Image 1 (spheres, rainbow, N blue to C red):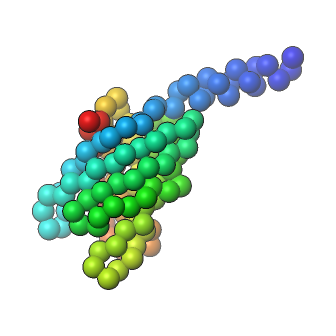
Image 2 (cartoon, rainbow, N blue to C red):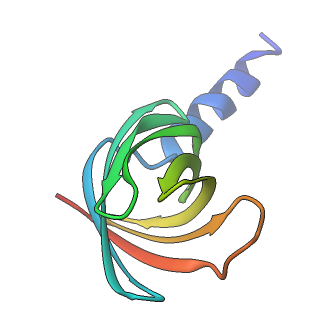
Length: 119
């Protein structure tokens, strides 16, 4: 019975993680003007997978995704022209909205701020 409080704590923590499964549409102001990106998230517990599409980089797979409380993080591999890159995303979930920042994994650009709304 000593493990019972730990088990309850684990379930309570899992229940606190927001569920972002579904389709989201994000907008941002980039260096060359307005940008749009769609996300399709699939969440299983705290693990997040899925895909994302934009007119700049096409379709990308979401990897290393996780939700902890109201924070979501993940990585996508993208291609701009001939250049392959990894983009790291970090966001705060607030109901049907997520405020993200994205940045190249090598830190080679200023973060871009996105606002995503559940569709």
